[in-house]
Image 1 (spheres, rainbow, N blue to C red):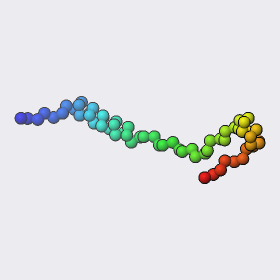
Image 2: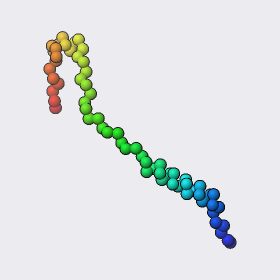
Image 3: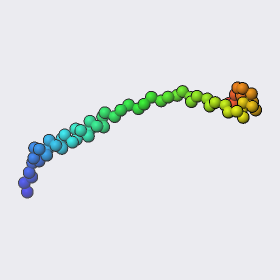
Image 4: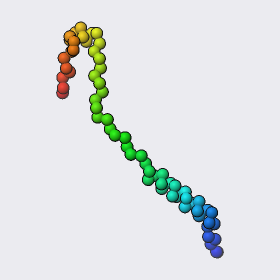
Length: 62
């Protein structure tokens, strides 16, 4: 049985598909920077201000 070579158009399209898929994997964007700043403190409600004064004492750190 004689093997037929791949037609040139098919070979070029397969090579282009492989090159595009490899290029898509290589250009992944960098991960975004992590923001380590804590969120702003919540405002005190009226009940907290009446019970503890203004401003209330700091929460204990465990």
